[in-house]
Image (cartoon, rainbow, N blue to C red; front, side, top):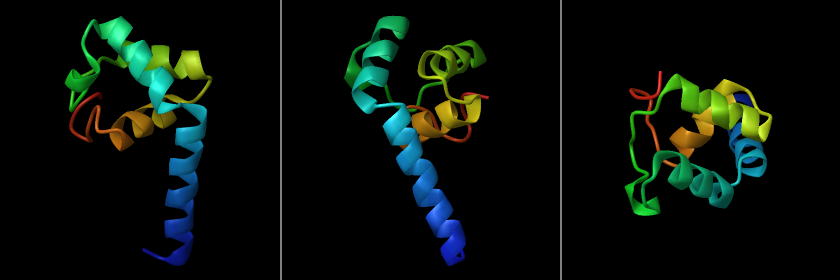
Length: 80
């Protein structure tokens, strides 16, 4: 990775963390999925749920997916 790639990756992660706070996201997911916080790990989530998160936080679907990946709620093989 070049320095520019690293800076872009860092900026994307920071933006996702600021726009989609962990605490509120976990609260939303616990309510939506009816699971405890400790069960929010490597889930297979629907495109509809990604869209709800996107709409709730006014971010793109890709940003919503990135945040879920960063928090290890989904990984690259799950969530569409």
